[in-house]
Amino acid sequence: LRMGTSGNSFDGALVYELADHKLDVYTDSTRQVTIGSTGNVGINTDNPNKKLEVKDAAAQFRATNINSDNIYADFLMFNDGNLYIDSRNDTDKGGFRFRTADAGAKTSRLSIVPNGDVGIGTDSPSSKLEVSGFIQSSEGLKFNDNDSSFGLFPLGSQTLGFNINGDEKVRID
Image (tube, rainbow, N blue to C red):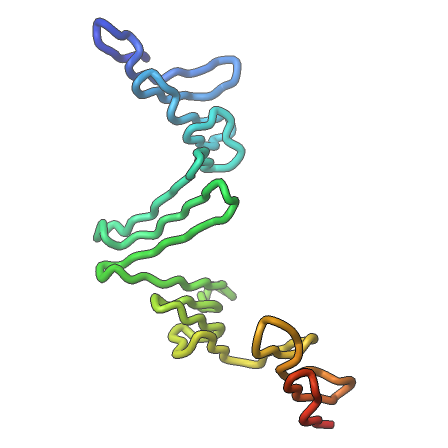
């Protein structure tokens, strides 16, 4: 099914390709959407490999709340290979919650609130990192990112040392 004006008979079209068993949607004479034989949908790709595949130099997908255009999450993939997720609610602030489901009950596991604070096991962290529960480290805890000269470090089986400028100042056996 092709649609167009008398000067251009191919402005828009729905084209079913018998050989590949897929449906292509054209606008302005350019293929925009493909529905493959497996039901996968591709935007800017004629061979989608997933249920929805968007192919672009800056691929973007927006999920918008049905009740307000000002509540949404944008998922963006740029040429740097990183995935960016932006969220917004009506007050121009948005956070993230990563949840898991156990026997149907959904539980927040990791939260990032609009000011950048991160919570693990808490939905409302009050500092840059707040953890509800134990933290386990096999390497130690550094208080700067330059070297291991300042921090708490395991010194052996059930021994903990506190170092300042590379010198052990406190040992707990």
